[in-house]
Length: 401
Image (tube, rainbow, N blue to C red; front, side):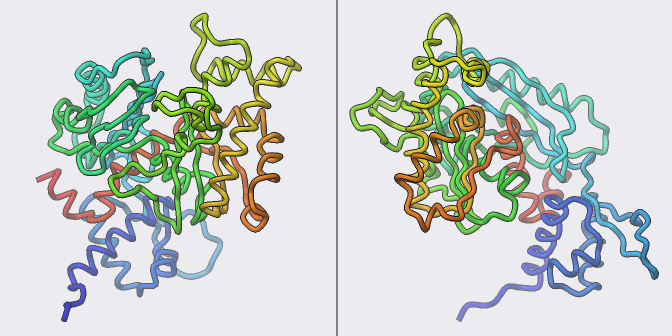
């Protein structure tokens, strides 16, 4: 006979749940927490007292409420004191942010990444250098409770190794281990696929808040995806789930970086659009080049319009397949796919009308990312905060002990 959870287990769970409410929802009154968590007022008071003593939250009187009687104290995250480092490694961009509890971006650095082989020591050294610059500017009483990175590639769940990343030219790279060593914080660096983390970000802080079933599609050089089902990310057995960019939509079509042909990435990605628009070559690439094609189409450029129509055709087919399989409530387009979708929405919807089954598409919402270019960085921050939200006092004691 298995024993039930101990009082300490229950307390740990409740501390994490309360901190999560404040972290994601912002300043929240004790009365609201009592209602949301289904606990009595004395328990909420004890939990907030523990988190306040640990320096994770603070309690304040609310602004004028307009109500008679004693006001309920408001619980706020200690955003300026407790923070994580979030890293984003894309084909063309490196970004680092210091993100406070509650999701506030306190400081950030960005740099252009030259396309080419993934030089582990050079990249890890640059990213760690940015983090050290930001850390030197913090107050003495601040504490870093985690670090995580979003990368454009397949990441092994257990150890943060980038197993494959054709658009980063990375394979079998122990990125998390090396970045953690360079940071020198005594903290592990979690690593996740950029589209998966952006899906989590949109689900927790973006256009997909309160949506339990959604698909996020991310475009950079290639196409990635993150799938939220029943409120949880589908990561797969080893963490490689969501590689929707390598779903074949056109057998015998364009060669993909993965070695296959006709993948969604090959038919919809940056190279396909620029080639169809006659813009491939001459050093033009990246999101600026994609935006230029979309802008040209808006101005009436026939070649650009035909290019978007072609790409939108394949994108719509890919989305229809995903909608038929997963029956999401929402599909979100992020990265360069924000621009591509906005420029080809009619074509995408036309394809879906032909190929998505009516029950699956009837109440489907198609949206663009609310977090825009920050979605992957915000997702990395949420991954870094996961440990402290699971066991707030233990994590804080470990990093400050």
